[in-house]
Image (cartoon, rainbow, N blue to C red; front, side, top):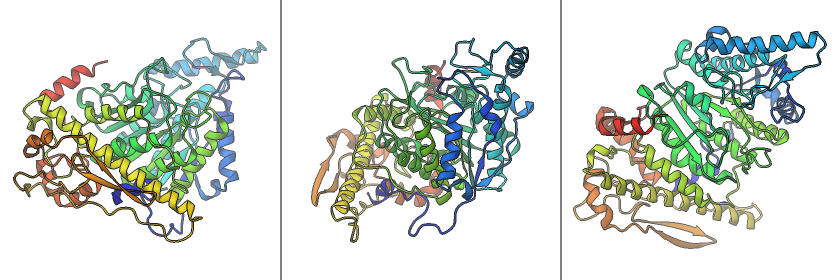
Length: 545
């Protein structure tokens, strides 16, 4: 429980006193990107970048960053992701518009392709700078010139596919930078986290068969929401099967609580399993409160918290690249909060705990978790066997995963409510006095080579499928008991190992079981997804576009 509580306290990287010095954070921007301008009322406007840079200055954050030299992407870099005809078209359309302006036609922009894209005289140059600046930020981090970075770029890129522009996007800035890192920077594995409210279909499309890039996208899905892709079963192809992970939200009005649940239960476990050398964030802020398009309710504190959580991976080598976000003021504040997290290695303030994840979020995440557990360990206890092929039937596998999920969700919610109660007590006390400690973590589950006592479930004392979690709410201890009957999982224990997945127990057993896992007793940190045998064939067939 205590390990889970850290998730809510904003302490993923720094502990104890605040760091006395800032991390070296690169900041890259170029005025040419403001020349990409369309209709006056278009939400993807130059003011998005102007207000963001102004907010960094207003908060004194720009002076704390290391300025990086902006540059345009080269043909070689673009051709790793885009067809030559598309690159030529981008240049040709801008040149055509420039000629029309010079001839006095008054035609400043074109939106004739009707795919949520406009073109202007400055589009070709701006788009090359957008892709080049993200690549420059990544190179600065991988070379060690800076520790982490933010690229303030437009037009955005995550919708652009190999052969065409799409959804406000001309070139796929993040995918270009990923391909460059893998090809020239000695990077072996890159993780991309796309928290834009829209699915990053272009990143998915370009990297769909790439096993060295893990793509995780959290986005609204269904009910005609753009772009319509990003379903659960779009999991990659060929060697990249299992490396494309979608977290599709089937309802709107998401809050920080929903994203905290997704990070704890899906995003962070995936990153631990994958073990990236670099984390790239497609940082759209259109899931923020009051956005013109996203219809969600994330706050700057939520984005700062997500940034902090990502810093525990890849040695803190994290690059944020601006994508969406159409309330210019809120986008600026969200980005500023992220930069502060990059600088100080922790969020300035944790998101409020007054809201719980919605029931729709619980249902959505359960589907994601149970689907992805066929390929990744996720929160299965360290040292325990976790692959489907150790079970005799699909029914047993489904029952085991259902029990595992319920245990993990209850542990997460118990810790969250305990943290909320502690926060409320502290507020009632005027913020003075020693903050009460959260409940102590349960005893660790038996190691993989220590079988459970016959007739008793392994790790029965830990918070989990058939256990209880003590939750201190307003000074009273409340027992939270699972509804999963013990007899439904006893038959699986000998095959699957302890189904309780309390994070404290799992993390305590991780070090002891690392050697076993690395020797083939299960996927350890840095492993790829398990796509062997019948599971691989079945999921590849289901994942066909």
